[in-house]
Length: 86
Image 1 (tube, rainbow, N blue to C red):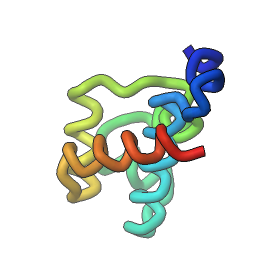
Image 2 (cartoon, rainbow, N blue to C red):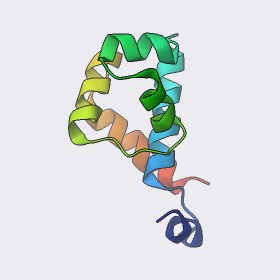
Image 3 (spheres, helix red, strand yellow):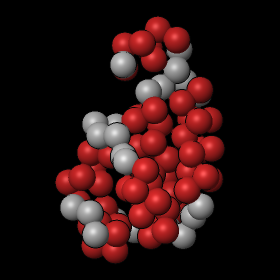
Image 4 (cartoon, one colour):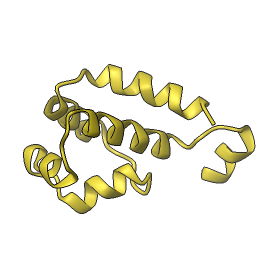
């Protein structure tokens, strides 16, 4: 999948989600540990998401959005823009 994205000149959705998640987390001045504790996910999973190694489920997207006090749709819009950027 990542190879296909690279050929199109785009970033994979997983990598884009990771960048967006990390950006929002940093703006909220939260560590991965703090986000994990507040959201109920393990810190290693948060790290895997931020590195684009894992793809979040819809439930995870909603849970993290709620924890970060941002609309899930806002995250998806940012991911869409980040996936197009190179």
